[in-house]
Length: 512
Image 1 (cartoon, rainbow, N blue to C red):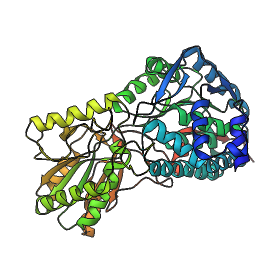
Image 2: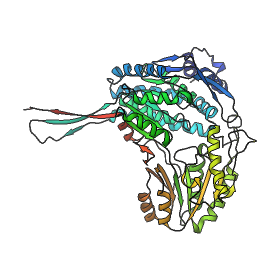
Image 3: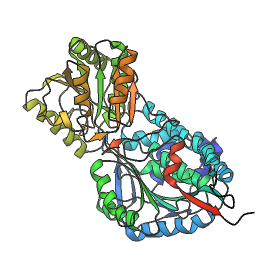
Image 4: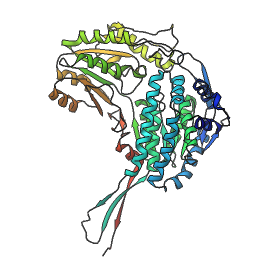
């Protein structure tokens, strides 16, 4: 394992002895090394750079390339050239290459987790859990490559044979978010490469180091040059880079995970070239607790669905709809569980801390403004309710709000923070009316001990994914995606390959 880790960094011009391979040293080496982007199998400099900070303590971690449209154009053309050969490899060959990458990812799990903790602020246990989750996509699609079947269609005419095959799209642009900086990359890259596509990855400005670490391990796995490219850019260049990826005639498809607002902009850009588009956008997940539910299991589900990554997840529970008979009991149980479960602080410095900061100041201000709006309009603060400045500039207390009314922002907007908005309801019909009164529909959760109600509510919730008596629903084997303004297409599962392939129909005529 150490030998492998040594070679990962020697490819960046470093020579490291086994004695130096203490994990903390390795982690620091990772952060100090990634000052270049990865294009066409090489580490590429840029004339401009931007800083990356640890959100928990504002520690400067690294400066990475601030790439503009010329740099990204080079990455696109490199991917286009590589596509000519990569698309002609067999699915089995592509699967073998992905397995090599998986081996490197597995061998460096702890280092990858530490990088994520440093640049995103999530606790080490959550970071390591994300590595396992991210690796599962590489594992799954390394095998799914060989199951991209075509179809032989019974012909209506004796002299013809009809068949349909799936072909790779071409070069794809992958634009990923900061909240799950590894999993959102592998969930896109693995099926893209398995299908025979080549890719240009544009990671989020807040968390580019994880993406560059993945590129280093792809380099070590000998993924052919130009097949996987990583371009980093600051917020200043993000719009122009995203527009180029969407409008370039050499890019066949875009896969984006992020806000609905940005997704709409990219959708508009892609319309110019009628480009294939996969969007995984925002959510406003309802979490319904019916009076017949097992409340202890419901509270455990709420903790998992709400507070993972400090509430910064698109599938995070947002509106807690609790039937009036159990409302007070559930809220009290949730308060007790939050109080005893969380130690908030700098997760990169204190292993006991299990609730970290929000990603940046803009996110802090957004969450705080939503909470203060609710308080000003009569919401009751059961727990928390504001910033925790004694810990740092980006910490927000885990919060429970009740007495919620429809005129409050928290009633309709996705909070994306550690805030449980608790709304009382009387009937099942009312719960569904409130739950479905949203422009988005990514995930939804509900707890019940009535099997008839489980089927009934599960079918009536207007979301792409439903957790029934369960707060953690994401699995590689299942299709991930939403309805309404939560996006287009599906990631993971066998359907994840569909976003990176197109059907070609062939008709053989004049057969005897």
